[in-house]
Length: 78
Image (cartoon, rainbow, N blue to C red; front, side):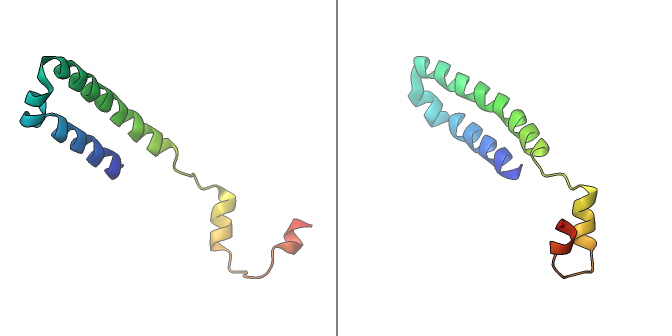
């Protein structure tokens, strides 16, 4: 999430930097505006995507982590 946020801030900082905006000219203003709108829309979408893509632990996962038995699981598989 931090990388996504820093990336968005970096793109915004670079594009809205006055020398770049002036160098783009009138036609470039439209392109830069579209890029800013795209980045602005993609940022919250990426945050939601990252949030929901985190693996959720199940009861079986918690039991496996807290199990004190360090032997083979071969007997359980049969």
